[in-house]
Length: 193
Image (cartoon, rainbow, N blue to C red; front, side, top):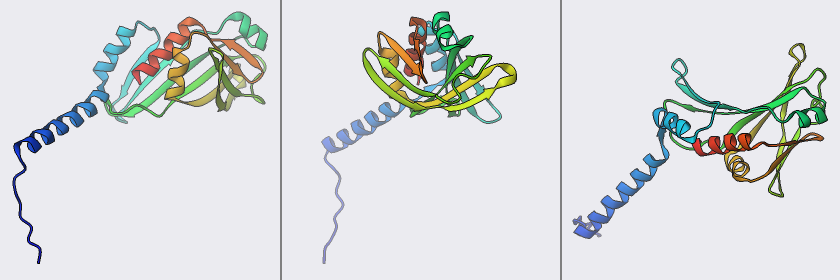
């Protein structure tokens, strides 16, 4: 017969256990950011066109960023009137408890004639390294002269793009030089998320 005898752990063991619990709690809360903290972070980054909206009915927060247009020369070369992009991610409640795995990324294309319906694969040349971001989901509103190309981009890939010095987005058969303001916006969203 085996007799289990309960004994008190030595003081050092108790101390280490308490320290471990505190460290785990601190690490967990360090990742969690409230909407108020995120709003302050957005202001401190000095980037325009990032919004935080909380929908009380669905208990969901959306963070969204909308870029400036790509250059007129890139748009003209692609046969479109203008193009920009938007990024967004959502989370439940009023605190971001953990970083999202992906960020919704959409190109908004103003064009009189569809240009990306047949070819909407996206790659990014980031400082000479090619990052394959896959095929987008295509949608169009021909009566409004709009095309939408929707991607889910890994947060780590978005951070790599935002940290680069020079980025060229290749969408279908066309190339678009990412502006410094667009890079700053991408980097800000990666930091916020």
